[in-house]
Length: 194
Figure 1 (cartoon, rainbow, N blue to C red):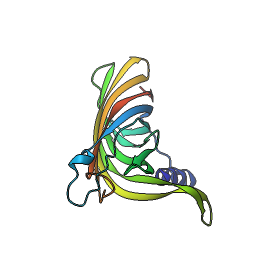
Figure 2: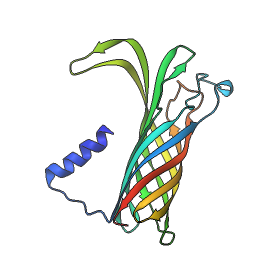
Figure 3: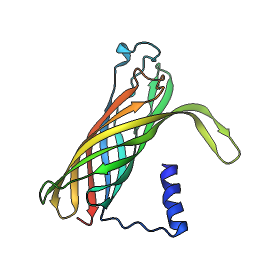
C-alpha cells in the first residue's frame, strides 16, 4: 500500500493528470482458505493461513474503455495463533491490471491480475523502537502474484454488490502449509462515472 500512495503522490507532484473514465471504491468481508495444517508437506510449516474474517478495501480506475488499474488490501480482523502460542495476523495487498466490461445496465464483470505482497505480523509482548517508530510486532514479507474475478451487480445507481474471488500465489510462504491461498467474499461499493 505505501508504494501505491507514493505513486499517486508522485503523479500529483509532477503535474501528470490521469483522466479516469470510471472509478470504483469498495469495502468487503472475506474468508481465506488454503491447504490445511494437517496436509502440509515439504518445507511448509503446519499452519493454516485462513480462518476468521478478512475485511478488505479496494479501488480501481478504468482509464481506457474497460481497461484500467486497481489495488486492494485485506487483513485478518483478529489475531490467530501459530503453533498455539505465537499471535500473528496476515495482510495481503496487491496492484492489478483490471478488465471490467459491462454485462447490461445493471451488471459488470471484473477480471484482474497483478502482483503484491503478503505481510505476516508476529506480535510480541514488548515494544521495539527503531529510528522513526515503535512496534510490538515483527513482519515476514513475501512477494505474491494474484488473479481474480468479481461480478458487480448494480441495484441502484452507482452502488454495487460484488461477489468475488482472489487466488494468491505466494513466494517462499514457509510460515504456512502451502504457497497459495484463496480469498472469497463480497464487497459493497460505489462506481463514479457509471
